[in-house]
Structure formats: structure tokens, C-alpha cells
Length: 353
Image (cartoon, rainbow, N blue to C red; front, top):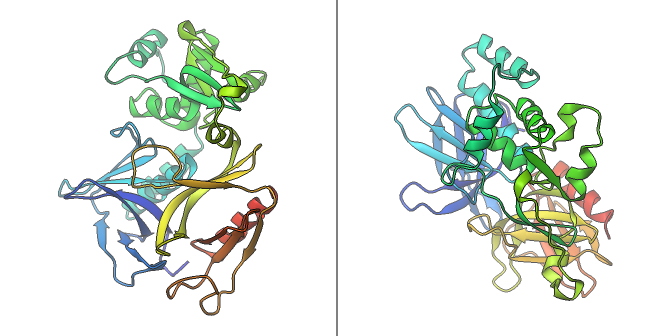
């Protein structure tokens, strides 16, 4: 990282005038959050814009967009609002933590308090579980169960563990993720919630209360009174359903060269195992459906030379590139944001080929 850079990487930003969503490269410094446009796989040298952090307020998790659960909201001193979307809950929380630290950089006591809060735990006193559950059922601001899949099975009226944790924090029932997880475990122990599927059912065997509920985007839960399970018949399971039924191993924003036009676009890549697939999503779209993907069985993955433009790559795109060649000889050219990130992706993909 450059000197003075606290954190950098891709986030998806909502536009100011037209509320569309675009991937931008963000650089966090002590007082400013800069964002850059990508052209032809390269970051522009001049920032597209900057967010002054002095006097800023941050909301995380931000649940203002139902189809974008991984948002951070920044409100500047002049009341300008910025919505930024991360590729995972862990990455969102890491950005929120660093941005909060940068906002309070001139107050060492506040920064120390943040570090203590990150590792602290305190359950709110005299909390009413019934009041929480009533609000969870609220049609406008509550939890909205929907069909979810796990390992080829469809579970009706369920919600994700990480989504419930976000909801508890955003509604001020919990002050930290650890506190929200413990509160969710209590709701489950008191039979307000039930685990659904392999991931969440396995966790309840843990003796530690704080580990019985999973803050995880693959663990499913439901309201106790609406527990229904429907296993899809094998003959009805489409190929795409099978592809997406695997366990998520890794996800993140990467730049990818198009097959026909050969232009470079930022995509959210999701690596799954059992079965082994690499899918990519358009982060500017609302729907959470992949725009492409391929099986990793029999694939080859390798890093490309950092000196000069490699064969098969269009434009002056250099650095942190790697290539995946599928079993049917389709070539995918992908760019990571750093050598370390490229190495992590290559290692993770190799294990599944």
C-alpha cells in the first residue's frame, strides 16, 4: 500500500444524480475517502470524486436497500449521502471499522474505544424477546422470509443468519455482531427461531451459546411457527440450481475481460465447492443472479507475466493478471487488485480443479 493509505479496494457506489450502481476503486486516507474510475482494466490517475470524512456519520449495517444487504452509508457534514456496497459481510465490516477510525482520527480516545468495542460483549439489560419477535414480524420493517437453497434443497420462508444479525444491529437491539449473535442464540433457545438445513443444524450441537447461531450468509433460519421444508425432486433441479448449491469458499471483486467486445468490467466473483464452480455477478444490477460462470473440474489456472501485456489480453492492461482455461478450452482473463490477492485466488481455485 502507498504511504498514508489505510485501506483500498473495490466498492460499488450509488450515483448521486442517477441512482445507478457502479464499481469504483476506493482509497481511504486519514481525512478523505477517494474513489477512482476504471478504464480498460486500469485505475485512472485522477480521482472521480472524494468524500471528506471530517464531521461524517457512518451507518453500518445499512438496510435501506432490500436487495443490497452489504451497504455502508456515509453522511457528510453537508448532509450529502453516499451508499457503498462491499462484496461480503467481512469486507463491509472491515471497511466500516477503518472508515470509523479515520473519521475519529483526531480523537485518540475514541479510536481506542472502538478497538475495545470491537472485542467487547454486553447483552442489553431487561430486553424483551417478545418485543423483538413482534418487530421481526412487522410487514414493513421486519425480517422478510423468502425461499433459499442449500445443497440442492429449497427451504421456504427462511432468512440468512447474517441478515438477522444485521437487522438486530440496525434496529438497536444489539450494539455489536457478537452481541447480536448471542441474542439470536437466545431467541432460538426460547423457541422463537429454528435452524434450517445442514449448516445451522450442525451449529446447535455446540455447547457455547454464542456459537450456536451462525453469523453466516449460508446458514438458514426460520420463525418457529412457519417451519416448512421442500426438497426439490432431482429431475426438477436445473443445472444452474446445482451449480449454485455448493458451499461458498471465497468471494470478492475482480476485473474480467469480456469474451466478445474484450472490454474490462468489475464483477463480483463467487467460488463454490461441491460442486466446484466459479460464478460472476454484475454488481450494478439489483438481482442476485450470476451473469456467467463455469465448472472448475479439469480447468487450469495460472498467473500471467506482470511485465508487458500478455497474449490474449486487449488494451494496455498489466499487473496482477491470471488466466483460467476451462475443460472446453474457454479462456478467462481476470485481474486482481494486488499480487497477494491474485495468489490467494489462484491457490483457492487450484484446490478445486
